[in-house]
Image 1 (cartoon, chains in turn brown, orange):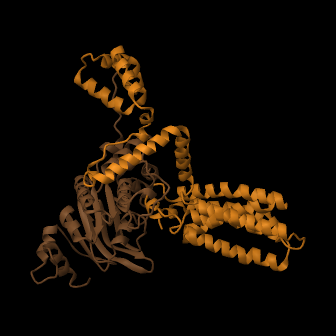
Image 2 (cartoon, rainbow over the protein chains, first blue to last red):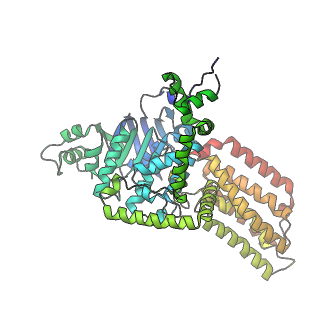
Image 3 (tube, rainbow over the protein chains, first blue to last red):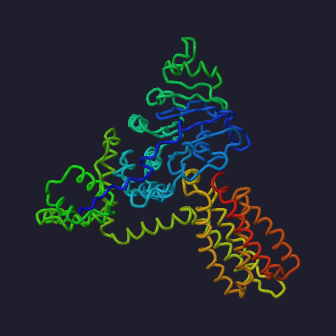
Length: 266
Length: 297
């Protein structure tokens, strides 16, 4: 009798998702230093590219750091990928499926791009034999393959940021948090980056914080407008544009909607 | 049903014999994930295939056999700025030339750096240098001003030196990529312990060497060092590692170094090993119980 072989399908590959939203927050409050920078945020985010828009100091970075499980919330509820970040959720399991690019993206200057992304893959517990392939894929996706073995300190600011994007996507995250990812990218690279966002947004929840209205118009399926630690608007870019009238300040419909909602708060 | 593909199936696949679609699918899916069966497939390959792969391998440049060194064509990102890309490729060419020349040494350096970064903050070197500087400073003072009445400065400083390193190992201000590291799965107790271990590994030999020179017995400082480190970490689970390190060092200066300098002589408490053993066990227990607290700021 001939013996049969089967492909070992990892349980994770066929497991149904146990959550309705990648991000769910109710009355979330997070402190940044002494100030409560996020004060009562209610938010539900699913697959797609979500633009987190708001004036400086609105609490965008604090919100993203909290969703990245770096900051502990001081009040309210927050669930990321179905696990609560408050109380005793399984933080380690969530973090394995998370990608995060901080705003002040610090790095080790002596590392090469490949070493850096590999180190991050190791920290995210990507299985050892998959690391080399995953790193190569991530580096190619951000267009750094020909500089992969150069030290980070020899790269330009835009390239370092792309290395940062590569480390964020190296573990094929289910939730990708990017804080001001377009800072330092030139116009051509920004266009490529938006294409990458579109691609990622088809099966991933991508949250992009930005203060550039044109980024949102071009790349996002959904806009979350934050002001003074609260969500003041959530909807499509078209809905945001519809909020503005001809009397509002701004050069484009979305800018006019933005200033109509913020009422001169910027 | 076995874990691996049967030999005759592999040999039939290798020779290109017709296989039922389901078995073909199962075999190929298995080969994708199983290195052992891929090797068996290579063994079963008929001579024409082996000859072909041999000739391809022979024509490959040795440098490109290392998957880490394969140069790639510039991607879409570079299409926009062609000149930059050309410079990048030129730089890569030069770099891979160096890599071939110093091949083994280069690869060894990569491996060393990878190992190092898993245990210590890649930017830990300045902190370790500072710790060694503190030890050698204390040693120097001991040697310049030896006296029977004055306590050995090395002995007094030794227990808190590792704590300085611990503070550096888990600080937002000293690890440039702290935010990045803090959001990953390994962040938390595992990384704190790895980095603490690395600090101890670097600092303890320096203390041993210094102790040998001044004649300060390890019995007086080794257990206190470990105990103070454990207490600092335990405190760190409550108020954060960096603040805990500061508090511990402050308390040590006020409670041990101060009185010792004022009164003179080695503080009696350093010799009471029961106290330090209890502190060590207590500290480790608290760290173990509160391990989840290290995961978030």
